[in-house]
Structures are given as structure tokens and as C-alpha cells.
Image 1 (cartoon, rainbow, N blue to C red):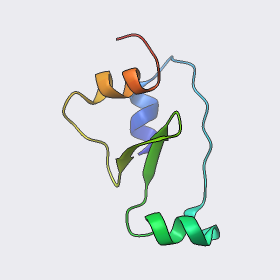
Image 2 (cartoon, rainbow, N blue to C red):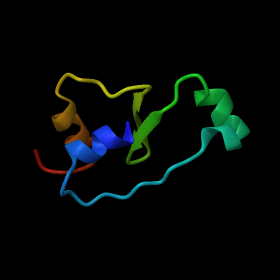
Image 3 (cartoon, one colour):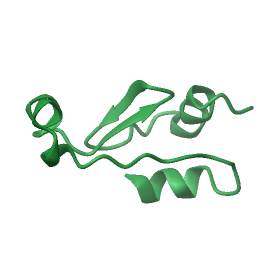
Image 4 (cartoon, rainbow, N blue to C red):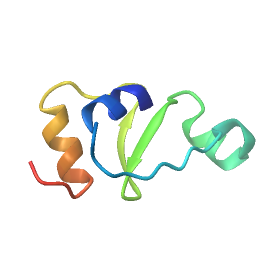
Length: 67
């Protein structure tokens, strides 16, 4: 999923925090069966795979970037 986001936001400034869900019991219980998960600005954006319909626009808006 990260590679897809990198391609979609190529050239845009962004920060990543990568969390190993398996190392945190609470996160493993919550997301263990649905990883990867993607949060944008602390809000859940996608589980397992990115949505295809209007993906670029949705992701850019969620990240606070212009269309």
C-alpha cells in the first residue's frame, strides 16, 4: 500500500509513521487480520488495499492537499 501512495503523491511533501502492528497487542487485536491499514491525519483511510474509485482525489483531500 505504501508504494501505491508514494506513486499517487509523487512530488508532494508527506511524513510517514510506520507501525508494526504485531508488536503492539492492542493494535494486533484490532487490525491483525486487516493489515495493511492506512491512516491519514489520524483518521482511518483504508484497510487491506486502497479504494480505486476517485482514489487520488480522496487521498489528496484527506491529506489536506489541493486537487
